[in-house]
Length: 260
Image (cartoon, rainbow, N blue to C red; front, side, top):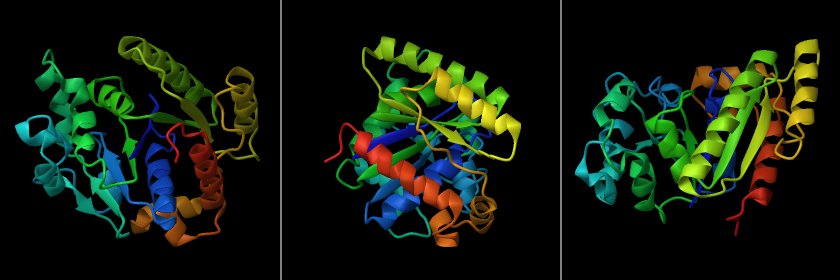
């Protein structure tokens, strides 16, 4: 299984959209995909019409069940989506209390990695949708993944979130004594606005070696897909956003050190 975290310490940059779009396109290629919601807001969970306020079991329960390393138990938490080869490990709003509840307990940063290890042969890819704050959930995502994707909105304020995310990544890599490959992905790009154009130029100047050289455009069809609860390529397989995500997936697969 290849595990990619989609993360940024700023909200509204397209993390959930990226997880859903990439997951759907991987499924289109015949891959078995697990989407994992680590955000207490439960946007990914809500996308697929699951209610994060009242799910009986969710990712939250893996932190308190000794069976989090039990494959059979983990499978009882997983939900189906509209594609047969894409599954969802949902979030509940209870995740918002997790930091306080597990503070100081050993091994809490590795719960997700150990859980996914039980599903290693069940899926080809796991895509992790992360919260926009540094805490036990983001640490779990970074510890579990082999590649980090950092969606960054092409507007000035998003650059601060990107700066914080890079700082966090370097800090975690030092603490874990590992090198985690990452790719910055410009999102919500609107070539008609000066803000988008100048921000993309600034990204290219500051992060040339780590930046995907294309950009995910503003595309209302991506929003329409979310409204309908379907994967973007099911809504419009030739839409601008879907075409951009196809190009991104192709580059991520080529760059993935575990590919093949």
